[in-house]
Image (cartoon, rainbow over all chains, first blue to last red):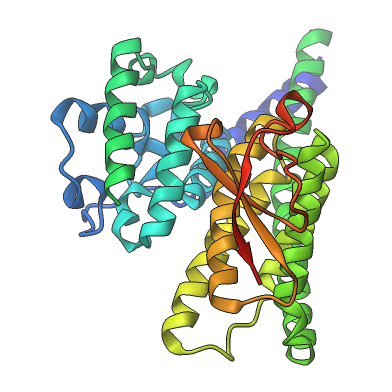
Length: 150
Length: 187
């Protein structure tokens, strides 16, 4: 019995302890001039949807709910964000060449169309990130027009 | 109580393995960097071979897609990504270098995606990749005779390169092997 108590205590200390391990938070107060919304004429509804559904992992600013500040969940999340930003960062949009932009836009369309993005593990908690049929059409239309204009 | 013990142990294990995994990932990354450096050193001796190497890997990838072979496409995709990264543009003009760097960055990303996706996705990436390679050849030229072919059905029209005049469609494979036509000969 005593050993259980000791283990429980050690674990508790460890769990509290890892909360103090510093992680790099994906947060920034500056909006870059290269941001997708600043350089493109994005309709308000599309802008809002993109920010809610995509910007958490594809920009320099994540809206963290409280539980995502708790370790080890936060570690798991940082990995996701790192991967997402490497693939596409809306904040740095205008630093891409036209060729790269077209490529990215084509991928955005395919990912949304096929339902691969936003990730299921994300929409499970962020219900508002899901696309309705109407929202999906709206965004894909906008992105397609943008792609063809480049 | 026994259950609690097991639970606690599992959690501890999880945490340990998680931290461990993160460490490993970092180590792998370093290895990758070293390889790239090694390749760069070899490259200086192989100026002329580089475009042809890219083309040859691209054409093998195309053949694998024609054959509906997703696994082989993935392998050829990773070969292509490697030969793209090894492309040294220093012998071109500043403007061409900029254009080529852009093309290579884009093409590499698509080749890398091809290494880790199913055949449908591979073909989507192959479409943009083909455009990149065609643009690259327009700058670099080639020693082989190539045919630019076009399929009007796939994704509002898609092009690709082939060594043979005969059309074998990489976007549909056996489903519509003959769809498409030669639109240009590159020599």
